[in-house]
Amino acid sequence: MHGSEIIWVKPPAKLTMAEVDRILGELEEYLRRGRPYYLLFDLGDALPDAVQRKKLTDHMRNNEDAIREWVRGLGVVVSSPLARNLMTAILWFAPPKVPHSLFATRGAAQAWAESLRSGQSRVA
Image (cartoon, rainbow, N blue to C red; front, side):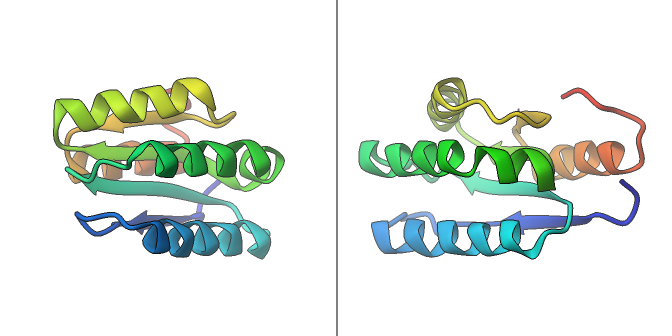
């Protein structure tokens, strides 16, 4: 959809449970707004621990309908191979029902979201 917002989330390198809760609260607020958007996470080298990964997975499952309705694309930037493997696992356990992809750079993620927004691409 043209004009849909691209929202970037950049957690701190040392991800605490309080920070995970804050981010998930903000994401739930975006869902409650009832407007379409593209969500891009820049995780850098941040590695969520097992409890944090479960919380992220639960959030995706619990908000599946709203995510499907309002999130037009979900991109995750992860700079290290280990972090990419962990994100692959999270997306495997709770695959979003929206176009989604992992990226090594912010530029690649931004270009992907813009291509979705302009209707030039529908698949990651």
